[in-house]
Length: 245
Image (cartoon, rainbow, N blue to C red; front, side):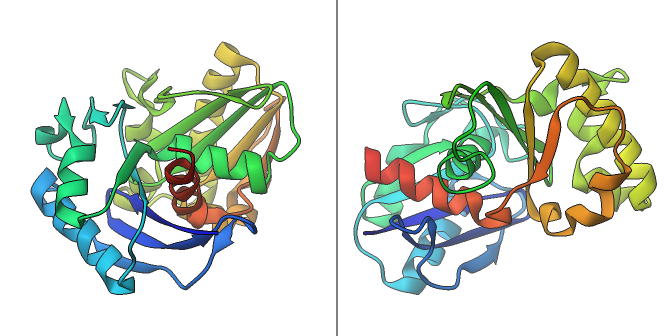
C-alpha cells in the first residue's frame, strides 16, 4: 500500500510515496526549498509542487513544525505567524486537490521510528528528538504517543533550547562537533531530569552523522541511538497518519 507523505521543514519541503508495508520510501523523494517568508500560501504552493512532481492521487499526509490539533496549526516558531490558528488541513487540501492529514513533524517522525525503526518493540518512556532548524520532540509511554510536546522550547540558559542546541545554531555559530555535542549534552540532561526516559532517539538530517557527535555526549543515563529512518522518518510518519485517517 502506497500513501504520499510530505515533511515541511524550516529549510526544505520534501515528499515521496511511501510503501507502508516496508515503512520506506517507494520512490526517491523530491525536495524544494521552503519559501521565505514561510507563509501559509507560499508553503501550500510548495507542498502542491512536491506532490505534483509524482502526479500522485489519493490521501496525503503532511507534517508541520509546530503544534497541530484537529488540522489546525496552533504555533509557528520557525515559520510565518500566519500559520497560528489556521485551518491548515483545509488550505492544503484545497491547494493540492486531495484529502490531507496534518500533524506535528516530530510526532510523525517518532511514530515512524517506533513502528519501523530504532524504537520498534521498545516500552517505557522513549523520546525522539529531531535536530534541524529547531528541535522537535515526540514522547512515547509504552508505545503510546503524547502529541505536541514541543520540548525544543524548554528554557535553557534563559532561551528556548533550540536556539542553543539545534543544528541551525551549530551552523550559524560555526560550532565544532565537540562544542555542539557539549550543548546537546546539556539539553539532554535537562530533558532527562524532567522525563527520565529509557531511550533517546536522535533524528533529523544530522542523524546521518551521528558517529560524529553521539560518542562525544557523556553522563546521559538513557540509551541514545540514531534514528534508523534518518531524515525520511517524517515522510513515512506523515503517510502513516494519512492511512489511518
